[in-house]
Length: 307
Image (cartoon, rainbow, N blue to C red):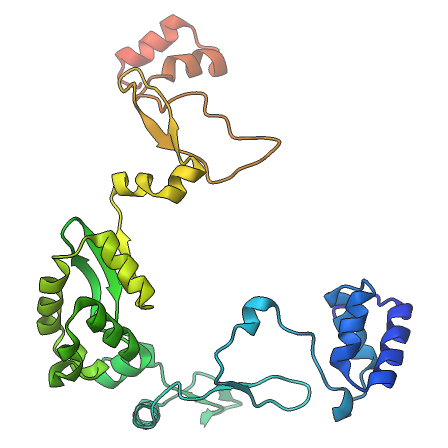
């Protein structure tokens, strides 16, 4: 509840539908059909739902983006709250190593109690600041292969450190044998041998066009993207469609284009009236029009080197 008034008719509606269906999800759906908003329904539920009655426990369904969860995601919460577990997120050996790393690096918190400096209410382990191969592998602080790689006609940025990404990368580049190479078999050994791995990948990637490689890696679900220079960025179909390059003729550059505003308003469109000024191009106009200075005063400032 956020202190918002709740329509009494909605409360009566929810009570009746819960009584009829004994299922809060059904009541929510019917309230929506009746035209009530999710915010109003959520507030109403807090007022009418019996505490502890498992027959009517329920929640407003998550929006579509949230519902696209992996199939191994489980809700292990109790009535009244949600707690999720993702099966298989870490392999057992990785989980054991992570637990050992946390225990080894536990430090007292800065919160104390009363006058006893030895009393601490919690401990913490900031793994993101550790210089440890286990932290690098498990927490993703350092990964390999990753970074910028040159192709035949440009460069691409790649993040292929996770196991399934690396295996897919090898498939795209036609070097499946790297998957079984002891130097590159795990995230840790790939990071330890990152220079050797990078040399192999560079040799493979230099035969590819950057866009073709990005497309192939994208189809294989490997995070990668072409690094654009200015010309390539403005040649992008989406950039062209959005009209992000505005013709702005300039006395010294008749073909000058500038970057358009990303904001688009239907009733008050952005106007591009003037090209970028040269250094000091409008100084005299501003001093005369805004400050009321005459030519003699402006000339005196120019002679003194002030403008």
